[in-house]
Length: 175
Image (cartoon, rainbow, N blue to C red; front, side):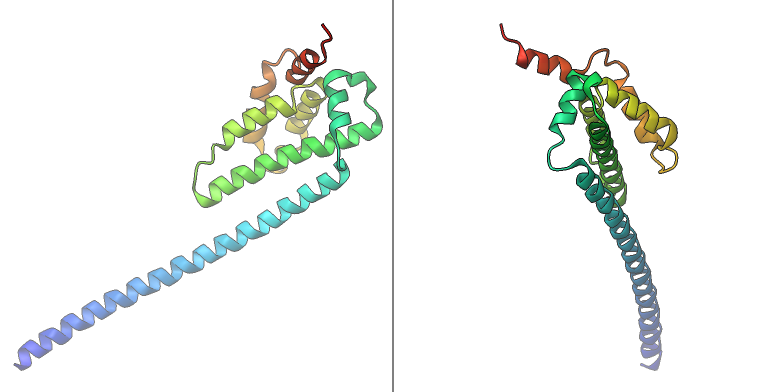
């Protein structure tokens, strides 16, 4: 009887020790998850601040500057240039947010195809391509967005004519 009680006690200790080790592993995992969550929250707050700033600079209605960039780039004013810079910066910031979110949550949010579509639409004008090229050369490495700039440049490389201009000219045709 004492022998079976000792065996039971030994097995109980082994199971208890395994449960304690497993529990400690869960605590470490939860701490790591919390750390990643805080890091993601801080990055998200920073990106939201940049977006808010760009929206404030851009104003409520950047359509005039975008239309000039697509249809009459020679008519762009200094104010239009500031508006377009904020608009283009916000598009690029959005790519960073989408990629960061995708990597943080470990899901493929198809950010590469979103980036390609955005690049074709936002940067298909001559001023847009010039801005994108300047960003890729100067700023992309500073903010760790080299892959984003490469994908964006590839997306607009084959655009011989502004996507917007072609569509807008069709809409404005008075035939």
